Length: 53
Image (cartoon, rainbow, N blue to C red; front, side, top):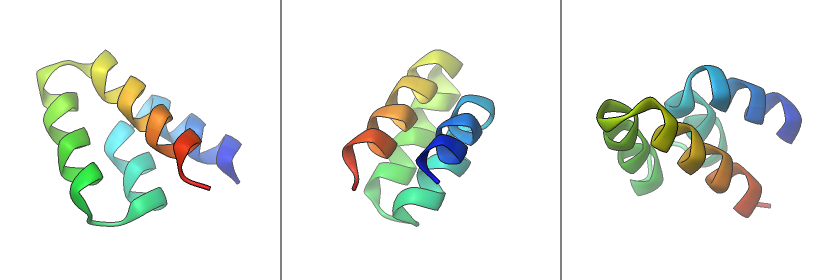
């Protein structure tokens, strides 16, 4: 399932984070990073998905 979330995180970073953590702080941070730049949003999303087990 993590592979699917990582693919989703590459295409739409906030959705990948939302599927992992819900509407917690990491989700809102990811939306901000994605708005500031698509690449930082992707990096953060992949990091959140890889970190959460």
